[in-house]
Amino acid sequence: MIDLSTATATEALAALRAGTISSAELLEAQLARVEKFNPELNAVVAMDLERARAGARTADEALARGQSLGPLHGLPITIKDLYATEGLVTTSGYVPFKDFVPKKDAAGVAALKKAGAIIYGKTNAPQFGADYQTYNDIYGLCRNPWNTDHTCGGSSGGSAVSLATGMSLLELGGDIGGSIRVPAHYNGVFGHKPTWGAVNRFGEIPVPGTWMHAPVDLVVCGPLGRSVADLTLGLEVLTAAGAGGIPGASLPLASATASSLKGLRVAILVDDPAAPTDRETKEIIRNIGQQMTSAGAYVEETAPPGPSLKEQNALYHRLLGAAMAPPGMDSVSLSEWKKDDEARHRLVADYSRFFEGFDVLLAPIAPTAAFTHRHEVPFAERTLTVDNEEIAYALHLVWAGLATLPGLPATAVPLTRSAEGLPIGMQIIGPCWADKTTLAVASLVETLNGGFVAPPGY
Image (cartoon, rainbow, N blue to C red; front, side):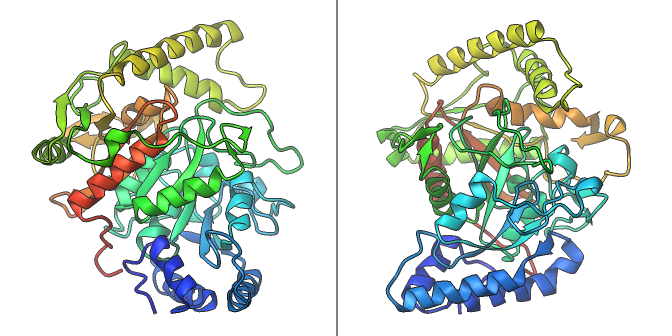
């Protein structure tokens, strides 16, 4: 039996292939952890046990015949409740959808199933994914396993908690405002925000009877896991049918310079007046930069390319508002949006020139480690505390927008714990379509810091 307090999806799959654990045994081991830990954490909110157990038996029988069902053969996993799952309730945290059971899977869910994964349950998320905390009027509040008085982040909060506690070993997240990266940071797991458009996200937040077919600006679909290898595997599965909407296309290989820290060109952005960030977070990321320098990397602290970060954040907020506005309630006119879109594409060109001199950019994911729950205060009235100073809640988005606005790939990696014992991570941002490069550099960082650490008691 593998140790689910520390095992990665990659290790579990190796054990399944070797026959040292069966899919049925792995599923029951995960369910035992759900029974033990979930009542306090509230991460797993719906389950499909009959079909999951049948799927595990089928996977074990196929393996006994020497047949592989795919790279995720027999791996039981959970899925964020914003993604449509055929035959399993998908609420998006919205009370009118509390009984909605889709008749087909979201594209990402279908890709995971085709690769052999077994979906046993859904994980908690804020209503329509629109918060940095995870709570809703159907399932309630999801708590951080490192300290249950603190948020687990959002919107993939239940996903990250499920991973951190071994209730699942791979998850499917979405990210428009840090919704993959922030929960990964707050819970000490890994996450990857792909290049915009790289992964098909059809079926996210499905509306009964009328699914959206047009791509939504800024938002992406990507994996969360307990190691960089898990993210790499998840991304390969999600792009197996094609990357960027091109059938059969693959993401480019990692840059040759990303195979070693020696000679790697690293930019660091941790200090900007538009992004209040606590001293501890900045020190931890700078320390990683020093370790990379000692290993032969060229590391330089830099300003963001293009306009000031304050201007970039204002542009990001306008485009974010347009992207998330409900149909019929557009926040900007088409002419205003086109003007902002031109500014965004100029920024994309600025980043393209910036990455001629650097391989990756390291930056915080959020201003601090996980903050205490504050969901009962109206959104507009919330604040965050950064080094004893109160800042607007919305400033949480500045670091998330750094990669989201220009559509760049960003890999979230855990680094260490704060003085309070809470996880602190960083994002590794790369050029457009350089997903495999950010993942390769994340693997180098993972080697430096020792990788995933389980929350105490889990």
